[in-house]
Length: 290
Image (cartoon, rainbow, N blue to C red; front, side):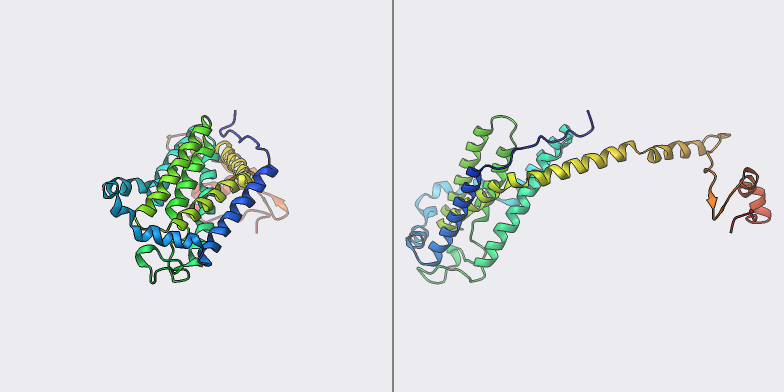
């Protein structure tokens, strides 16, 4: 068995999977349009924000302040990268780490672009009651905490070798709790959480389409590692360096070289490498050597 196990080939996403992506993408657009057109969803956003859930149940605030960390990018990504890095090193298969990194790139690009494009402000910075708060230089839609929790914990469930369904249920519960916690704390509108859920779901649904790329990178990296590990030139360098440290040991000389149209003979090579000749006369003129 080679130093790196090759990933299993996966079947292409089915038609049902493609239809599901279209459905979730449609829901994403519908949430944005509902906010933009001052629909009942926007009215619900304002009613919930003005009700101030953190004042209705203040005893939950301390617990939810800690729980919402499960959706923060820094601590969760650091912990997951450390665990998947160890898992990839132990199995000699970088696929889990590459899949997770791919999910992070998709998340940053897709969610970041929408955040910058919509420019929505959160409830704490709202200007007028009933307004959409769009295009005001904010970065609140969709909820980054919510999308992070969907992608990070959902990717772990996607990579789970066993008990994948149980892991998916746990990931879904974590994403729901984190999204609702941001609404409770007043940092996001409810529609922000909706946008975060569907944005994260889109990233997870796109992962199977990225598997061929991950497989090519895995195979390429495995081949490169094998070449570096078995390169005869790299293996001969320590032997030559070790021979220099042993008194009286014979250091291997370079093979006879061909210069221009002639070949350097043994006598000329011996003269060229004789230390006294170099010290007294300088480099000798070897026939057929320019």
